[in-house]
Image 1 (tube, rainbow, N blue to C red):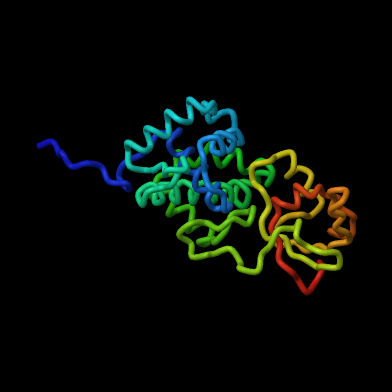
Image 2 (image 1 turned 90 degrees about the vertical axis):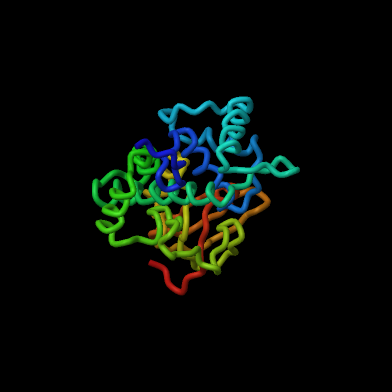
Length: 241
């Protein structure tokens, strides 16, 4: 007898495009942003080209209508995108698999941290619930990604005392908490200079009038743009090293 039961959120598998949309919506909301179609289009442009997504506003609007029909998102009167309960569950699943994949390729496979975000995108869509469980077990049930982002469902939450590097003041000793995962060129500048989660640095100067922040990291002076400082989360630290 053929079952007529509708697939549940756990049983069904979304298309790669739908998974990428939900992941991107989640990430924007996680950063404290309201999500509009134009903001989402910009976020989707950060995904690797191999994901094959159309990022024009008509393409984005078409996919959003599909996700709305499937009960995964709603658009409010201000044209802001909100995840439904089912959409939130699906989005958390994708983000969890993405961040576990980042850890897997770095900690187990030895992939460079700057490359791990792109490699994780290639893997995340193929991870089944069973494989996800195995990966979590292999990695020791981690709470955050190698970029410092929380893994949904792990119980880890962002520290309440974290703040943007752009808000630090000269004389602060800080610990890097989170760095952006989706800007490979920036990562290739930050990582060799020790600007990675868990490392410490001292703030030498915050010259807002010329838009730079000077740090001492690993005994070397590092100069960052103020806009970059708005993408790095830190915590005050009592030690340097």
